[in-house]
Image 1 (cartoon, one colour):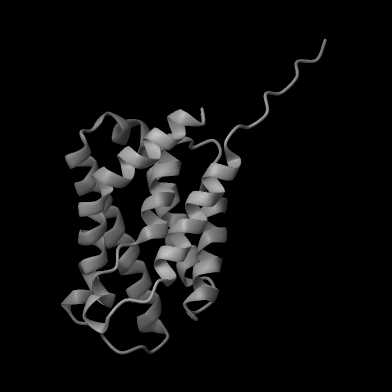
Image 2 (image 1 turned 45 degrees about the horizontal axis):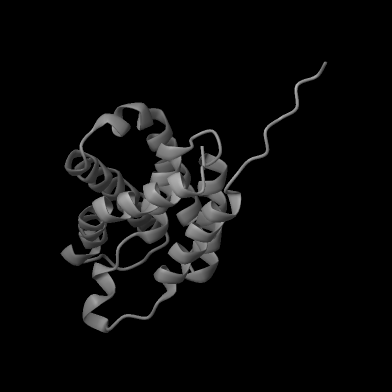
Length: 164
């Protein structure tokens, strides 16, 4: 007898969390706050790569990156490359990251997001964009500060809807 596959529960929750992250990324902010906007899509991607690495991975990161490239009028593939590398790093280290306390996770998330920002900066540099000031790096730090709350909220949602 051939075993039946279990249906994947909660796919719509994962998709909705990415939709909310994309909407938060598109939300207009005052000029002084634009450089402080957290990397919403990146931190939600990191969470789901840690929580369910067999369902959310490099391909999802690439697809989300293409959506961000279109949304932000960037070079097609720029965010896609950055988010797929971010997903790869997370999947390679998710077993260690899971056992870290939230404060250590937040610091590691900051390091990963600084790497992501560096990839974006290098690609922008090759395209001839102007150099950035020090506030270019601030989204990694604001994302680090939001990580514990985002982790707790998404973990509770994942448990409520039995996503595994």
